[in-house]
Length: 378
Image (cartoon, rainbow, N blue to C red; front, side, top):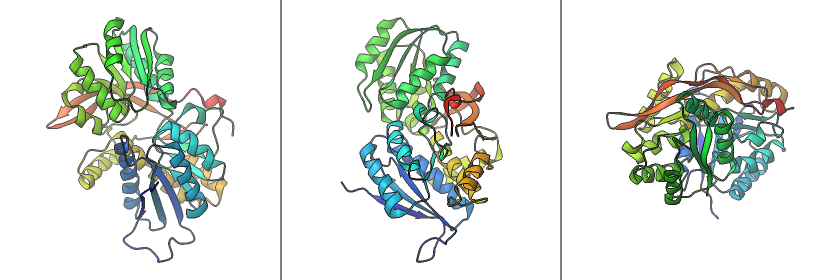
């Protein structure tokens, strides 16, 4: 199967024979086609914006489309490591692809910087010293939703998510913090578009709230069908079901829904304000949390390169651990398993002019880290 390859350079021109001896090559495997393409496009655009703003001409980024298929992703990773000779890997959106690509990459001595997927299996006993997650551990935003449900007095939630690692982590995370009972629990098919049966179960369940994690096109389908169903049970979810792309497609059906995120466009710090303004000017759309994660991942990489090259693995690793960069989230720190310690916010879907977006209404979890860190030993 033919896979489209895109090579981006960080300056108008580079030496004909590639980057300098001190330069590095980054392999980005992400989703650029199919139902999840918008997520990968945002990660790519955020990452490349940071590289361009850095003014460095010694970073080459090779970008490939994984088509949301684990076998394709592994083939691309092998190509990047063996043929392209990349120093650092990044880009994976989906946790089932991360479970295939990350262990494969770090086993061959490469550094992997995740701008999104954070499966629990890679945060605990399956952690690795060369694996860093710049976004979150999968459970985190769902844990925050469970905490928010408690604060709202919900005692009988119906919960659903796709049946893949991130979906399983989502429901685990919600249940970890949520103190009420469950009216129902469903693992749906990954990529599912028809939710009539699930909505019928919700209607009959007696639930006082619904928590769902359905990223990309799945979330668009569910929200539209739920709004048209006449069921008026309050919805909650993580930001993945309420990012900028989804909101524009869903429209009024999403207004007022509370969701949880480690980032939003109204976080008040200079880096974030400049990022939102510059991203919107360059790409003609508001950034999503995926774009912010790509931007932060690139800036983490750039900050580490100020100190060491990946060829000096110990020094480069220490520079990544220090995380001396200006994040869109404000202060940024890694826990002992190389996953962030950070605030997770409750956001409400609003409309600004003709644009659907989110605003922060409070902190759901403060300086939160994942529960798997104690199981990690490098």
